[in-house]
Length: 346
Picture 1: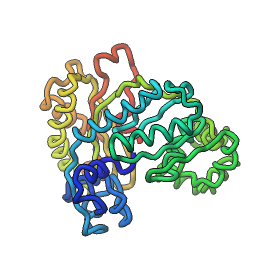
Picture 2 (picture 1 turned 180 degrees about the vertical axis):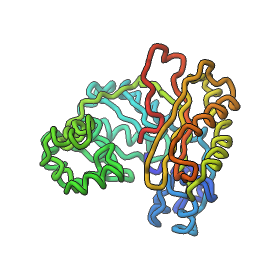
Picture 3 (picture 1 turned 120 degrees about the vertical axis):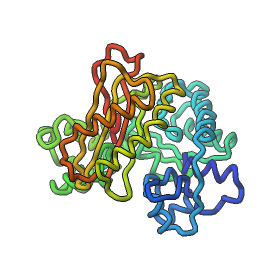
Picture 4 (picture 1 turned 45 degrees about the horizontal axis):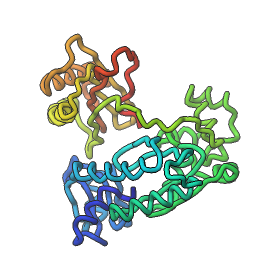
């Protein structure tokens, strides 16, 4: 979906149309949830600190998010998807993968299916969506961003070899700022540069993920669309405007615990494992997790366990933190699963 939260607000409030809308709470510690394309012209984007957004776009109109409304629209869009295929893998309220290899209405090609779905979304919700069509999920994701907003881009199998080499390497999933810096030091700026490195060399530098980089650079992605994928964890995470002391992080945990617990209560979830994550100003990141004998049964229990985990970090008493997170995982329906997934991946 195109600027989903902001677009819903502009659709439902005509006075906001054509104006720079910023969905989020203004304030020192707040971040932008979404920005309309009018606001993006000023450099505003999601996850940006609200104070920076206000400086970049003084005329911006801050709207407090209404997630129940956004969720209702998301369900409406999901129903449109499922007319065409049962293989729908939601990534968030505004994004999903669809496998249309077998299209339920008889549309013969993926491109025509994408055009039809976009048209139905526009007609039934008065919102626009952009779509990417490709042989696999990785390439479809890149294609979906190619002609935003309200665009469609297709990568056919025979086009992959020419399409990938000029792309900046940061376009590959999993390549964030830190990894991009490492790749730059290796002389890798584009996917074409990465293609010159053999798999063994990449594994030597990046471990198992080196194999994934090797495949992505060649357009290989065999991961299936997983419509039944369960959410493994619930968490809260924030990058702070100014670095916090450990005592200030503890205060943040006390503030976040009730809201996180309410999210679990609303879904009748009882997690066994509590995780706390910290990141220092120099981007050193660590997590501590605990599965106590008696799982948390209240927001107070959750907070107490998290505060105990906070004491187990070894950054030093004078350390400061640019990011903190608290999460809960290992829900009862996952009985028998030993692996605890990373609550804060990406």
